Length: 75
Image (cartoon, rainbow, N blue to C red; front, side, top):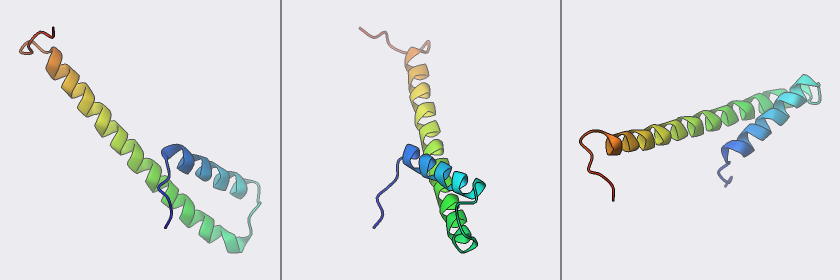
């Protein structure tokens, strides 16, 4: 079973694949496999970005609700 990649790990692996393709370091036989892996890595990155955006928006909403006119003063 493959470990879950962090955004940074997925992005770095994706950059490596792109560099290999750009520099012609892979064979035609490997190309399909590399492109499929790149697509998987892109999905991992997109999902992590979506999750992070949702988390940040939730935190900002909570902060906004706390500092709004109806909020109780924090002591």
